[in-house]
Image (cartoon, rainbow, N blue to C red; front, side):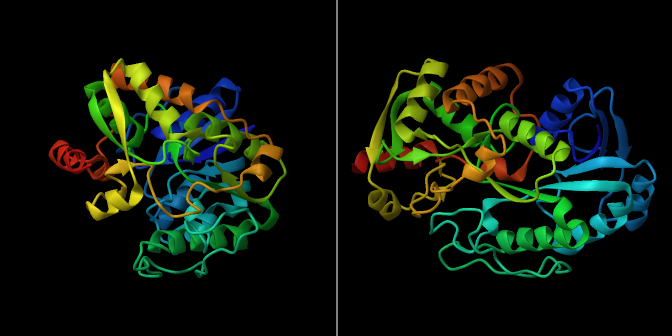
Length: 337
């Protein structure tokens, strides 16, 4: 099996490359060479995927059985389309890492793979779309939906779309799970979003990587929601963080209305918390039927803490600073309860 990984040096891309090499596959990576190190035993091609000549030069290194695109999250559809056009003669299948945000109903409604998608042209630029007054839909979702359309136009039944909600695990660069781990380690009274029994569905990066590789080698097409089918309660999640870090703390469960009234930002100041009904109601049964296997979230917590304790943050990323409530603000909210 010979694959091309767009990206390949950090978090999901790195896990995909490492797992592919363990399978004995022939791996080419394509990135700008700015974030992370190229893995050993890969053919590393450096270039800018928004540069047409760089893409044409990349295509000369083919052919490949499949491409796994992990690096289009910040690109407009027209750039995804340009890459698909340039690589189509050299690639049989395209596995595209997308997002659950492409659904028109997210995060308000429960979702399956047949839920309606946002509409966006395949050649749209970065100005297309909008973010709703309540934070949904998002311009990001429109852009990613356009990226999916671009790949579909070029690859048809050879296109696969992975639509994760939240990916956690060793190497995470956004900082959601590392923040909770550090907060648990600090101990004391920990502000937590009630109800403690609310189930969340984060998926482990290693399980996403394995599924992506299986799809690259398979014959399925279309979209797959990547969300943990069993999930974990928020209480169980925080208990795992406390157990792994040895933190002498205790969650103080605050009702969502209280947190909103106190100005606590959903999704960022208390990572993984959001009040919308559909955010953790994502049906992943199609992916499970296609072979998605999700390890227990407690294992993700354990292994992330081991990585974090040993290696720390892998790269500087602007989204890191968005996550986690400031200690003084947390203390103020706790004092009001």
